[in-house]
Length: 127
Image (cartoon, rainbow, N blue to C red; front, side):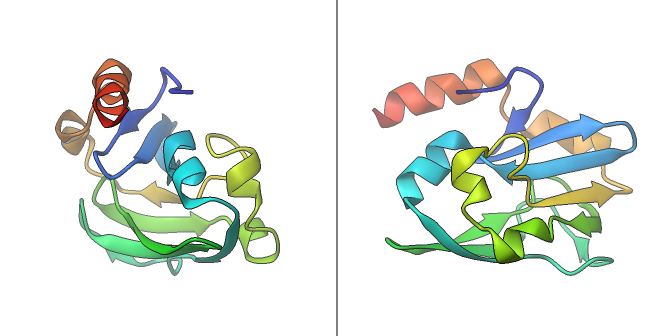
């Protein structure tokens, strides 16, 4: 599942522009690779992040993984529902399972990300 309205990182994060905010999450591929998600360390509201910087951590029964910012910006809102129910990321990674929203993001950095077609090609390479 690769939504056409997102851009992607090679590390399996997605970003969707929603008005003046950039909504960020991990891809369906990433959540499947991690398995049952048990904990998410969310970024702090107001934090300035740079593109490709680690800004959150996700833990599962299999492993822990860093989440990288797909764009530079300011964390406007973290998805607090994931604190009590991290499994939402497994159930709906591209909608209800979003990680955070970035404000004041750098739109030019979208050009550094993969298109849906490029991300699908990457997934095919990974098997």
